[in-house]
Image (cartoon, rainbow, N blue to C red):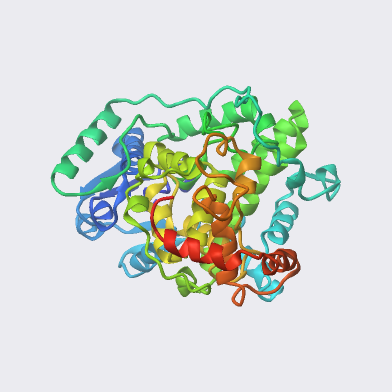
Length: 489
C-alpha cells in the first residue's frame, strides 16, 4: 500500500483508504513566512497537524522543514496525494516525480459531476440550481423524489432578527481542552515571532477542533442542542453572542477533520427521527451540500484568472487599521465589534463577513484580490479556494455576476434590522449626510452612484437604481464619502 501524503487540510480519516495505511505529514515553516497569518489560525493548523501525527504514531512519517521541497528530499518511496485545495499546490505535486495525484476528497459532489452539470448550464451558474442538482444527485431531503416540505429552499423562513433581549436560549458550542501539543505549538509560535515571523490578531485559547474526535463531538452537540435555533437566527447578529446557534464547524470541514456528508446525513436524521425543524435542517444542509461545494467547484471550474477579477474597477488598497485588525480605531459599532471578533477569535459567522466586512470593503472600493488574501489569512477557516468565490464572486461582485445575481451591498437599515449594533452607535442608520451619517448608509448610495454604469441592469437592482436617481442630495453624499476615504469610520 502506497504512503499517503496528507496536507494540513486533509487530516480526517476519510482521506485514507485503510486505517493502517502509511502516511506522510509535512509541517512547512515557509507557509507562515510567505503570508502574515492570524496567530490563532497558525496555532490551529499546527495543532491539528501535530495531533494527527500523534494519533498515527509509527504509522506516519512526520517531517518538519522550512519548505515542502526540503522535506520531500528525505522521502525515497513513492507517494500518493489526494487532489490539493489550491492551484499552486496542485501544480507543485503534479511536477514531482514518484507522486501520484488522486481525485479530490472532502467534498460531496465530484469535480467531474459538477463540470458535467455546469457545462450544460452554458455559463449561467447559480448556486440555487446546483443545490437542487446536488440534493437530487445524492438523495438528500427527498420524499419520493420531491423536496421534503414541498420546496427546495426554506430560506425565507430563516431571516429572523435577533431576540430583543439579546439572548438566544441555546447552550454554547463545546470548547476543546488544550493539551501538551497546544502548549508546544504556542511556545514554537512565540519563538518564531521572536525570530521575525509576523502574525496579527491576539493569541488566545484554542476555540476550534484540532482532531476528528473533537470535531465530531461538536457536530453531535450542534445537531442535538443548537440545530433547531440555527435556521431562524442564521442571519442575525448580536454583539453579546458571536456564536448564536451556528455550528462553528467551518474550520473542521476545511481542515478535513469532518466528512461533510456525515454532517448532511446527521442533519437529515435529526429531521426524520427527532423532529428537528425542517427550515433549520434545510438551511444547514444548503450551507454544506450547496454553498460550500459550490464555492469549491467554481474555484476549479472557472479559469485561474478569475481570482483577479475586478470588473468594478476597485483601486484602493486595504488600509493599515484594517490589515492590523485595529478595532479600537473604529467608532462605527458594528464594524468595530466585528473587526474585534476577527482580532480576538479569527472567526465571525457568515453575515458579519458578508454584510459588515465585505459590504464595507465593497462600498469603499478596495481591491478584491487584496481582500481575498485578507480573508484567507485572518480567518481560521480561510483558504484560497474558500475566499476566492466568497469574496470575488459574492461579497465584492468583482466578476459582475458570474456566480451571483446582484451585489451584496446594503445600508445601515439592514444592519439595524438584523442586529443590536445601531443602538448607542454615534452614527444614525437613517442618515446619509452629516457628521452622524451612517458610513454604511452613505457608502451604499455612493457605491451605487460610482458604479451605475458598471453594474448590469437586472430586475433585482432596477428599483434601487431609480430610487438613487431621485435623491436630491446624492452629489453631496458622494463628496462626503470621498472625504471620508479610507479613514476608520
